[in-house]
Image 1 (cartoon, rainbow, N blue to C red):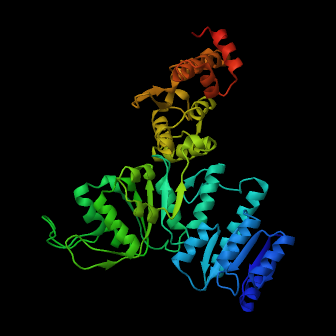
Image 2: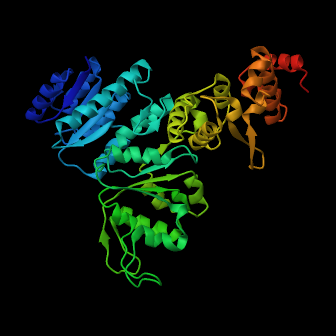
Image 3: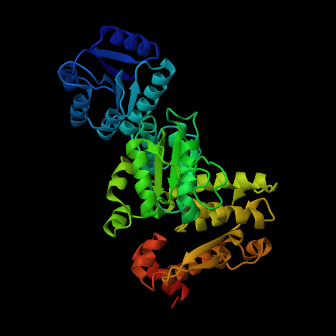
Amino acid sequence: MPSILVVDDELSMREFLKILLEKEGHRVTTASDASSVLDLMQNEDFDLVLSDIRMPGMGGLSLLEKIKEINNSIPVIMITAYASPENAVVAMKSGAFDYITKPFKVDEIVKIIKSAIAATVSNKTGEAPALTGSFEGIIGKSPEMLKIYNLISRIAPTPASILIYGESGTGKELVAQAIHNLSKVRHKPFVPITCSAIPESLLESELFGHVKGAFTGAISNKIGLFEMADGGSVFLDEIGELTPLIQTKLLRVLQERELKRVGDTDTIKVNVRIIAATNKNLEEEIIAGRFREDLFYRLAVVPLRVPSLRERKGDVPLLVDHFLKKYSDKMEKTVQEISSYAMQVLMGYDYPGNVRELENIIERGVALESSNIILPESLTLSSYKKDGKPVEKNARAFISVESEDELYNKGLDEVMATLEKEMIEHALAKTDNSKIQAAGLLKISFRSLRYKVQKYGIK
């Protein structure tokens, strides 16, 4: 039975939460002040702390810091009747699992507590919670992605601005959409904007709108994307591509919650949550003078890094299965599985284009495959030369066959020997004939590689 510690100076609130949570199957202990909490935590283990922010003596935010010093892994949910963005940001930065304002809905707090308890169980056992393999449209259940899901759940209900880092193709927009879907403004618009996709001459007008006559062609007033998103979330992808002028205007939106349409003298109030994303190192851009430091700190209240696919290779089979079903249905084909050889090739690949590249590989494989199973010959991978230029390499080169019939005519022993030899040759070529690096790439010992090189007569 999960154990919850409820902290509130109001007796009625303590009793209400105790009755509610005990009905949900939890063991509940209550305390009226911070000092009682610290005494209780010295002698008893709790799975969750539910604390008010405003209390006599030590306040909830200070108590949160003390709790984290005692047990950094315990989730703490903050509750307050005096909500403010500043308190929410401080709470989340200090390690709060979530931040709830009074009056709250019973269903809402029960759902958040269940999520927090699941995270506690996961931390204690070292095991991932039972997942279907997806979270708000994001595919993956590797430890790296479970950490992302946990962070999204914690930051989504707050109004804090978020900066998402990650290589191209990692799924930063999916993460932004998940944050919006779990936020308190999920019923309001989510407006994605790719900053580099809009011509520089049109960007200011697209973002902030314009009035009639502001420039040639402005035949009527136009609402900008920020106004369209009022009350909801704006996702600014490739934020590092913004010009200095637009950076200045965006900073005003963040600071003052207002904007001016192009050609207008009046200001317009807007209330939007800004989620930005970049594949650039913005700290380096600041040093180079290409990005405003004050804007960076406004955007990166909560930084979130999305791992590359090569950092979460365990999710490749799950993603492959998802994309197989997606494109088999889309193309009205019966390709439902992938051969073990083909999966070996995919698991050994580095994915410079990340999840987007894997999706393209599977889409192309489904289109090319004439049977109901994807074989290596239907996979086309991209390897990168030192000059950075992509070179197409078909995976069938690793098994030296042109058809399914030839594959089975060769037999398992010959195919495996050929595959082993050609993979070793490819690994050596990729590492400039460094046997140590090639052994690491192939995930075998140096001694084993040296034996196989001699066995196959590889020069």
